[in-house]
Image 1 (cartoon, rainbow, N blue to C red):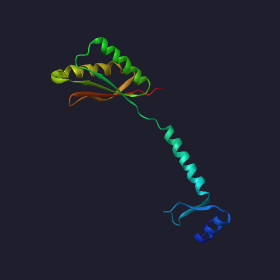
Image 2 (tube, rainbow, N blue to C red):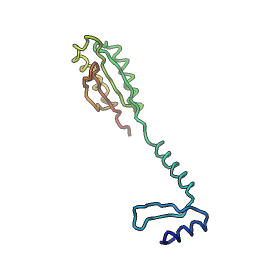
Image 3 (tube, rainbow, N blue to C red):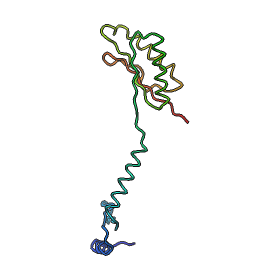
Image 4 (tube, rainbow, N blue to C red):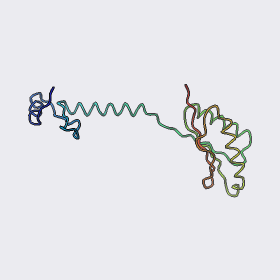
Length: 146
C-alpha cells in the first residue's frame, strides 16, 4: 500500500483484475482503493439493511372516548391503553364530540386527564389534551423499562 498517481493505481487494479474505487473524492489528493466493486456494494447494502432492522418502528395505538363515557367503558378502555403502553406503543387517546356534544369540552378534558393520571405508572404524557376540530387529543409515550 502506498500513494500512487492515478495511472499507476489503475495499472495495479488491472493487474489484480479488480476495480479502482474512489473512497473520498474531496480529499487532497483523492483517496482510492483497489477492490472488487460489486462485493463492496453488496457489503454496503448488507450493512444498511442491518441498521434498518435494528431501528425501532414507532407504533401509535388509538383509543376513542365519547364525552359521556361511563365508568365500565372507561375501565375497559383503560386496560387496553395500559396494555398498549406496556407493549411499548405510543398511545393516542381522544374524545370525539358528535353534533352538539361539543358543549361538554370540559368533561372530555377531565376524562383524558383522569386517564393520564391512572396510567402515569406506565407512560408519560407527551401532549396535554388539545381540542382539534371535533376531537380532543392527548398523546402518551411508554416509560422506558430497565
